[in-house]
Image (spheres, one colour):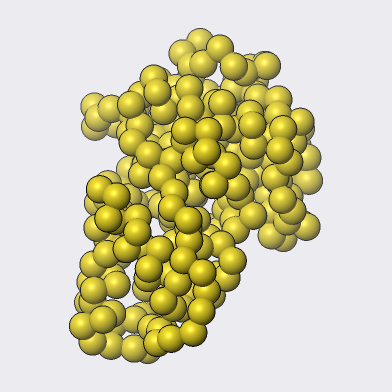
Length: 246
């Protein structure tokens, strides 16, 4: 078994194949299961008809199940992109985190679960030299199509454990903002910054539907207090803070 010594059990998934492109693993993607229990999620992720799989699943008690060797390509990210790369499955390791999700009673992630996610993620990131800015939400690599693990996922705790990129978000206040339908240089600058960070967006000076869902994805990860797709001063300042750290 290629992976970490942390898992409590192994359940083999069938929807896997070889990684493509001969590139190193460089991304870690967080998901939530969106199902009522971890057992149901494990069962589904190991079925051929699901057409999905992941490397690890962490239940709410902090128990870890491995389903795919890290050397193999799991089918967890789907249609996605980050820093211009589009075959995220070939570049990444996927962690499913048990949570019913927005459709079944979305709730906070228990501390025991977050501790296990942090330990697993730190181990993976260290072994594969994954940069903090490449520890991502499914919604980061698939804005608009996916919203998991969502605005209740504790990225601040992960960062406190040495995992991922994080800054304290700017407090929400008044001031000018950008929203869908706006055009001009400020929109271009916003889009360029989001693209520079890694999001799949083109700088075309028009705050279109794509820009809105990318802003929402950014907020779900980095400014969770309000997820509305509006680039207010808090959102823009938080993005500036992240970029200034590079």
